[in-house]
Amino acid sequence: MSVSTPLLDTIEPDEPSEVRSGNINSSKNTNTRAPVVLTPTSRNADQMATTENDAESGIAGIFRQSAHPMALFFLFFFRIAAISVYILCGFFTDNYVLSTVTVVILLAMDFWNCRNVAGRTLVGLRFWNQVDEDGESYWVFESRDPSRPANPIDSKMFWVALYSFPLLWSALLIVSLLKLGFAFIPIVILALVFNFTNAIGFTYADRDAKQRWANTVGTSWGLGGIGGQLLAGAVKNSVGRVFRT
Image 1 (tube, rainbow, N blue to C red):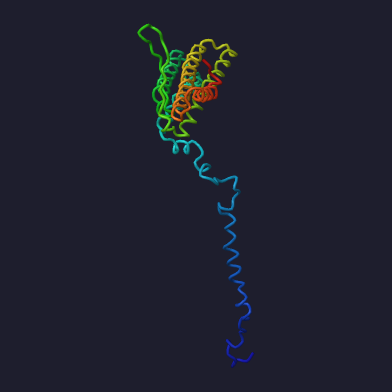
Image 2: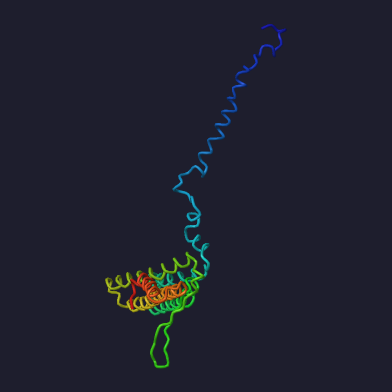
């Protein structure tokens, strides 16, 4: 190469085909598309919430869908607290009197709350025992107007709590008998009395409400006489399979 030859003339220009081929752009697009594989939208559908019900699942979702979250919270709080104190009190204290009094207070608060607050608020049911002038006692049931149905979440969780905790206390009674823990058996029996009283009372209240609703519907539809009795009997049999008078 001579000295007089300009340096720029010795540099060969890039091939036009390389510019028009789009290799740079295509490689760039390839690099930008690669992270898409790592985005949450490409995960397995089974691991993500695909519907609104899946997104609202869990404890937080239950309370968000509840019409009365505070009543629902205290319904489970007192019941879980009573069982937790009964099971764990031996790990924290040896004072039998303190443990017994604490469990009994929690059971009493749960009994009152379930009977007078949770049942009326969550499912629109109440029951109590009344004594007439002749000294005879009888049960009185109250129910919400059927035109105002309860919240499905509130109703479902109420009946779950009403029937599941008596089973848990029954299991604890069996454990106490097997371990010969006779000192704690009276507490478990008291818990069973409270829980089964509410369970039976609200079951009959719900059964009575459905029967009165069937009688009202039969009358309003002109199904008096045999037709109304058949409709009321069908509802009574369908909801009264467990507890019968």
